[in-house]
Amino acid sequence: MAQLVSTTHRLPSGHDIHVQETGDPAGPVVVFLHGSGPGASGASNFRMNIDAFVAAGYRVILPDLIGYGASSKPEGIDYTLQLFTDTVYEALLAQGVTQADLVGNSLGGGIALQMTLDHPEFARNLVLMAPGCVAPRESYFTMPGIAKMVSNFGGPDFNLAEQKRLIGNLLHPDAAHFITDELVAERFAVARTQPKDVLMRMRTPDLGPRLGEIAHPIMVLWGLNDEFCPEAHGRLFLDHCKDVRVMTFARTGHWVQVERAAEFNAYAIDFLDARR
Image (tube, rainbow, N blue to C red; front, side, top):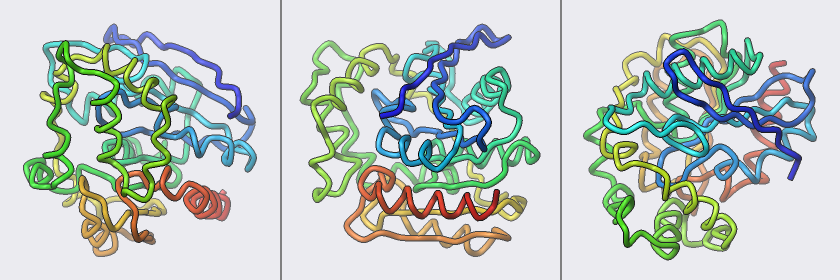
């Protein structure tokens, strides 16, 4: 994998946001926004995509969201979509990024949408993999994947085996070979530092009614076997967005960028290259 350069930005709020970067410093910027879950981070979510985007000439930016990776993990607060969006946006500005293509999975997709609504001049194009935050928060709790994520995360009995099970919930069984010992250990190390508030006090709005406000080109990719964000939500984008295309993948779960990495990389890069 390409060498990543790490920087930590102290924001006016006092929070630290960790950002990793690689690729051509003069190339078009692509920002990868990771999803939620114990142990999540920018590098662990997009490890199979970084090199392809670097080879295509992009400047690749991988922030760790607040509460995740090596960023600050405050306790006793609500983790709102606005908090995620504002802190990563401030960190990107501190990184010298003034405009970027946004690539977001799950919660990261919701952040990409919120950032585009808040700062339309900042976003160029959006690539979204099973984006969240396009339906009422309560509706996501009816999804079978959420029920499977009930865990002793944050407790003294949380261990590597439990971390591996949680990752496995994100993938179709055909993709179980992607759950390497290295990935499990990397995410377990992060998970052990996360407070329960990261998940228990996450608050996300329904941005579905606002999708029509987004005029930016959007590519949406969804696994037909996603148990966290229903692929039927792809229709919301088709019905309301001005410039959108939606792709679905059979025998694929919540991590299209991992389970279908080669296809994802090719389709996403072609989409972004055509709009440089």
